[in-house]
Image (cartoon, helix red, strand yellow):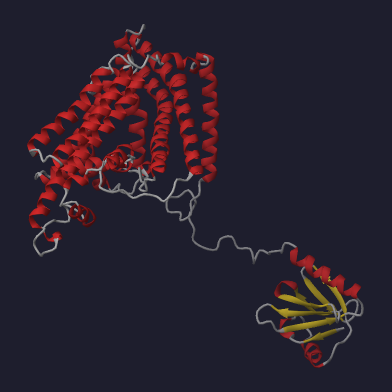
Length: 550
């Protein structure tokens, strides 16, 4: 039994009959399902009208055995069908559901592939680019290639990492130059605090205090360098890294406290005046937070010396001394354990890469170049060294800046943990040096760059001096660790300053500010040229020094 409500949505040639059916009540008809439409027949051969399943939805009332077809647009009734028994109703319901889940047919007039202006995905102007699959393929190729290199290395050298422990010759604590150097370093650090005690408590002449500070800081550099000569260069490199950190912290502490002393003297002179203190201090001299602290200790300036805070600064993952540091509320133990485990794995990875791959490669290169020094051999060995060198560099970065500094920060509840930024996306050398090592960058800005500007130097000259200091530091650590002065690290570092100026002009001239060419040049110069050459040069000199057989 069928009742017609809206003949406009029915497909039929008999419009008069449909108009009449709207007036009539439910009447019996024959039903038949064909593909995605319902056909209503007057008899076995004559179709009265048909209804598309796709253009309507059904309301099922099983209590009255009724299926009502409703328009999808305005929810108006189209037809209603009453059934004599539930079996017939279930049959139609099953057909309706199966047709809805059936993949709809699209004819040539419906499926039109050329429909709008579009670009190819690999074109630079394409708005949507996703190369994840290609990246996965590249990763698989790298993994396969490195597995091959691992087998090749093992067949050629065998397992070399078993020799690690006896290579580091451990001496007793009394005769160990590393321990002696560490002891002297600790003495220098405590002397640095004692000098400030003489300044703030005894009010010794500022000229004498300055001489004491300079002498102590210079001895911090000279004494450890002298004591470690003859030790293993790997241990020397670690010690000199620690020693240079202490050297930079002593400079920061002395520089900061010298300014603090002068500002406290100024506060004493103007404190009795009714004008606010910030009228006597420029914002670039001291901020409001530190000014309040200085005002608090102006009456008894010796109380500003806090030995516990000094020790906290020495252990904290920062090179710049402050009167206060932001602290977190608690130590996250699970997070801390994860970083410690990561750090252990990074150290193991570095040991394997150096002793299993880098060291034998460099020694073989030394022998090859000693017998047949050709450009082709050098290029081949540079490219071979570039891969393990890049892995070591990335592992050192992750281990030092992500693991070790975060471990230290978590243990000390040190809150500011921005130790680096996205240097891997840098487009030139200037961006790299500003982003990759923020503790050193902040130290150079605060204690080298700004004092140069204060003395009247231009920004260009100040930047050159910053690179000069950085170049001297790199050369000192590398040369002193192996006991050979070559100056290649100094030249390679300091030469970047004029190169960066030239690079900036070329970027503006060729409009390459947003190009990835600069990033590619950075990776190429660091990973495939600069660092491998430095490793070859200094390791060759070390082998010559110890009389390594060719």
